[in-house]
Image (cartoon, rainbow, N blue to C red; front, side):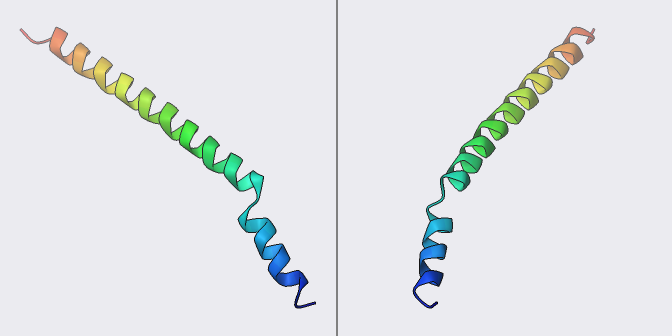
Length: 52
C-alpha cells in the first residue's frame, strides 16, 4: 500500500487535466482583460466626445 500512494500523487501532479485547466484559465483571463480594455477605451472615448 505504501508503493501505491506515491504513484497516485505523481498521477495527480502530472495530470493533463490540470494542464488543460491552467491553459483555459489563461485564455479566459486574456478574454476578460481584452473586454475590460475595450470597455475602458469605449468609456473614455464616450467621455471625450461629450467634452465642450
